[in-house]
Image (cartoon, rainbow, N blue to C red; front, side, top):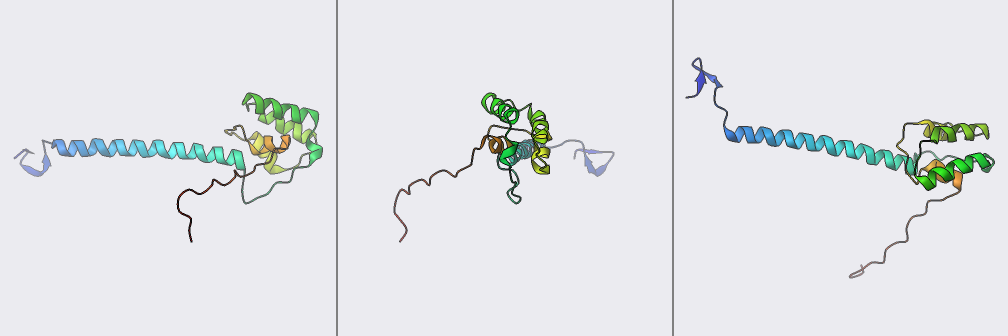
Length: 140
């Protein structure tokens, strides 16, 4: 009956159905881990783009020195945000004392075009896209 040492609790033959189920379980687990990692990255991009929606940050226009603006423009145009810590130093030299702004610039990132700090420096405002016209029957 496929047992070892006469024990019925220790089969020597594992059915192919069981192996298939184990393989499927491993595949599903690996896929879920990949999805979770991708979700964390997307969340990091959202945080970089929009910041903390529950905490507004005031930006003093006096912090827009020529050095600060030049750094922000260079990063925006090149999409290379490796100079974010340098931007933090330049903002601090300009009088910026916002912990949120400085911590964001000095953080690990990732940073992407549309970074809320770079957009603040460049005076860009986020505007929601115009609503798409409804197609099909209109609600009564």
